[in-house]
Amino acid sequence: MAKEVNIFAGRATEYLGKQIAAEYNSTLGNVSFNVFSDGEFQPSFEQNLRGNSVYLVQSTFPPADNLMELLMLIDAARRASAKHIVAIVPYFGYARQDRKDKPRVPITSKLVANLMTAAGLERLVTMDLHADQIQGFFDIPVDHLYASSVFVPIIRKLGLDNMTFASPDAGGTKRAASYAKAFGTDFVMCYKQRSKPNEIEKMALIGNVKGRNVILLDDMIDTAGTITRAANLIKQEGANSVMAFASHAVLSGHAYEKLQDSAFDKVFLTDSIPLKQQCDKIQVVPTAGLFAEVIRKIQNCESVSSLFQF
Image: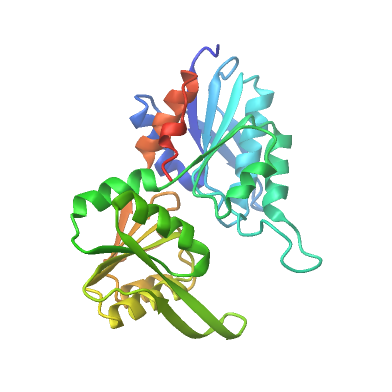
């Protein structure tokens, strides 16, 4: 058995690492970074790791330095004789590149899995992968958590009457159906027709939302184009209110402006990715307690399946 538990964080998600360590009744380990004038950097653990279980917290959203930093931390921990090395990656970047959707393109999520394993990773803990099959890209254990573990209690506290879940596109119907089943209600979906790539010609709603309080669900919000158009359509179709619950706040381009100007009453996003700016309609949902509980269960050799809600 490992002598003790050390929790460290990369610079991109140091805020989350501190919260996870606090929830675990510990303190975040000390990592220093030597940054060269050309931008190259070198991380260094400033404490002994020999024989310990090391947990590295880092989401791998752009820039690619965040992924490289995680790989370097894994390699450094292995060379420092850590007994176990576990990466906690709340947001697994490059997950949208999980297949060859046209000739001569990479399957980058598989490449990332290979890089992490080659660096010395022994276990991955992540949340709401864009595609579940990415777990199979790893030849090491993967604990795939769902944001529903932190979203469901909030939805229950809202106490909404006439609640309906919705998916902004056909790909998310399984998620909406799972929530609807858990709450004993129904769900609807939107579907898009495109006249050309990246341009929605028409969006239609399948299902009735008149007089309903609708909750749109998604694994991430990137440009916010699809989900805000879906929210506006649902409101036009007679919904009393529209809220969104999404796992990852990618929020690129004009996403913040689109959300602010949309029909949404509130948008709930986890802290897997830090917000770049403030938005009145966004409420951040903490995940530190969830990840700290996973660490406890791993250390005690207990089942974590109870945390795999949905």
